[in-house]
Structures are given as C-alpha cells and as structure tokens.
Length: 401
Ligand SMILES: Cc1cc2nc3c(=O)[nH]c(=O)nc-3n(C[C@H](O)[C@H](O)[C@H](O)COP(=O)(O)OP(=O)(O)OC[C@H]3O[C@@H](n4cnc5c(N)ncnc54)[C@H](O)[C@@H]3O)c2cc1C
Image (tube, rainbow, N blue to C red; front, side, top):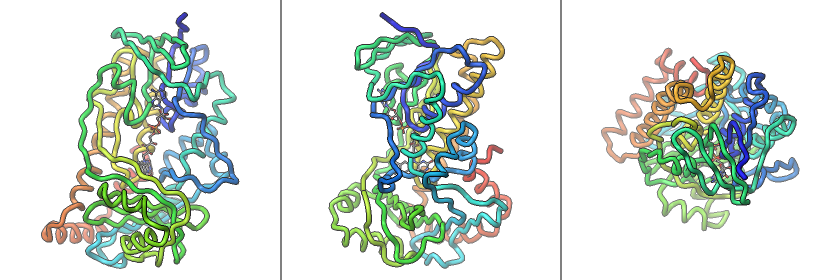
C-alpha cells in the first residue's frame, strides 16, 4: 500500500536536515505530512571522540541560520573554532609578501569571519531539534526507485515501503538519485584533482587563521581546529593524493610542511586522513512540477573557498521561505510556479559562485610566468581595493546582500 506524504526529503545531509527543521518549525506547514529519508546511518557526535575528519568552514550567516532553528547553541556548547583571520597567497611569493591577501575580522567590524565545525556535529545538533517535531526521520534506508508522472512521485524504499509524494526534495548529494531518476541533466567540469584531507599538529600556533596557499597543481587549505591542530584540505593530482594516503606519518608531515612553505613551522600528522573526488557540477534545472533539488544535488563547487555547505544552507532557507509563503497564500507547494520562484532565486547565485571557483582554480593552476606575474600584481592591488574587498568579504561571511 502507498502511504501519502506532502513532502519527502531525500537525503539527511546538512541541506536536507536544515530544510526539514525549517519546515517543521513554521506554522504554515502545520498539518503537512513530512518525511526525511537517508541511506546512511543516523550521524552520532560523541564529545569524547576525536575531531572527525570532515569539517567545514561555516560562514557567520550560515551560523545565524542554524541559530534560528535552535541548533547552533548545541554546536557551540560542544566544540567549534571561530576564525578571525584569513591569509591567501601564491606559491611564487612568501606568506609575508605584500601580494598576500589579508582579511581580518576587526577590519570589517565583525567578531569573526566564520567557524570551523565538524559536519557530523552540525547534523547531530539539527537532528536534536528535529526529534522534538512532527517529522518522520528514516535513516539507513535508501530510496531505490522513483517514478515521476510529471506532477507527483511514487517512491520505493529499500525496506519495501512505498510512498506517494506531492513534492520530492532531492537533497541527496552530488550523485543525486532523485536528479537522475527524474532525468535532470548536469553540466560537469572535471578538475582533474582530488582533495586529500587530514588533521595535523603545527609547530607554531594557528592563531585562529584560515590559510590558503595556491600551488601549481591546486590549492592547499589549512583550517584551525579547536584543539590547536589544523585540518588540511589539499586539492591536487590523483597520484599525489594516492601517495599522501599511503605515506607514513613522517613522510606526510614533511610533504605538507613543504607544501605550506613552513608558514606554521613543521606539521606533524596527527589523526585521520581521507580523500574526496572533486568536480564542478551544475544541474540544468533545479525544479520540475513536484520536484526540487537543493545542496550538492543541484550544484557542486570546488572546496577552495569553503562555500559548498554554505550554498546548500542558503538553498534550504530560500526553499523553506518560498514554500511557507505559498502555503500562506493557499498555493500548492509542488506547483511549478511556486518551485520556479525558488529556482530563480538560487540558480544564478550558485552559478556565479561555481564559475568563480572554477576560474580561480584554473587561474592558479598554471605554470605560465606571465600569468603568475599578473596574478601576484592583481593580488597586491586587491589588498588596496576597498569596495571590492568588502564585497568579497560579505559574500564569504554569508551576508545576503
Ligand atoms: C574536501 C572537502 C572540503 C569541503 N569543505 C567545505 C567547507 O569548508 N565549507 C563548505 O561550506 N563546504 C565545504 N565542502 C562542501 C560540503 O561538504 C558539501 O557541499 C555539503 O556537505 C553538501 O551537503 P548536502 O546536504 O547537499 O549533501 P550530502 O552531505 O552529500 O548529503 C547527501 C545525503 O543523501 C543521502 N543519500 C544519497 N543517496 C540517497 C538515496 N538514494 N536515498 C536516500 N538517501 C540518499 C546520503 O546518505 C547523504 O547523507 C567541502 C567538500 C569537500 C569534498
């Protein structure tokens, strides 16, 4: 027998969970039947465990969004590292060069530029909020079939349950099963890079600074962790990533100390490591009648500026806002005109960020001496360009302007 739901959210990553919490808390959606289904087990955060491998730079605007749903106090009470400085430099100059981009929270009159937080901790905190609301949460259960009749959907779960939905929200990540099942195509721009991720202990204090050094084969990011270690995200060739995964702790420390130009002294491998494939991907459309895509299911961007999760949170907030007003006006949440409002609000903004990241990565991944010279000159000039600097920082802070 088919069970009927108003909204099925496929995927309980940051984007899907945030949408579920926003919808569960708004008065307009009271009475709606809402379910969230995720293929993976429910995330658990244990304060006694080591800091997890996957951390994200979360913009102040995203933290405010999580605060609005009541999840941020839980995150802050657990562990989080605010960062108030950012340094971005090219491998052809030292970090102390005038061509190094410098951003300081004090200069922009904000207490911090953002926060480094474990992904699992944020998900755990949102779930804690959702447990107090009337939303069915199903983990360790995959959607294994979706039939869309042009308006509504029928879904089959791998536990045999069958659902009917007026609106299916695909929040199921970069390989989105929902997106593929309804036939939405994507534009892909392979980077030819993977991301190697590890925690290391630096010889010098990280001073709550997020560092990014642009190397010829990809950027090396170093994010401060609350226990004094750093999370390294090294976007580089597949072969370098494979070697880094295999390296001894000593070899890895040497490789990354050199790649960071010893800006934090010697780095010592200390904790988990892993690798993630990278690809810029953008869905050709975000919506069909009765279907909407959010988060990585709609767009996947290079991690170099730490924007992927932040964009997904903004998608969730916008879709929730639009569904809320539609319900208040007596419109049906799955109707095309309602969902098109969401697509118009988010697709252009996400495309701009995606192309900017892809272009930036290409601009730095070149061995041309001329381009390198232009780049460092441009970075030096950028440091003196008041309004442009301010705009870039506002985007990075997640301020919706
Ligand atoms: C190395 C690296 C570093 C990054 N650093 C940052 C950063 O600093 N800041 C930042 O903002 N972003 C960062 N990002 C990007 C960020 O991690 C992602 O954009 C974000 O986690 C995507 O969230 P999501 O909820 O859209 O998708 P996901 O987190 O991928 O969640 C999708 C969920 O869908 C579920 N699912 C999949 N298929 C099915 C199915 N058939 N049925 C049911 N469930 C299904 C999965 O189990 C999963 O839980 C980084 C990414 C990488 C790779």
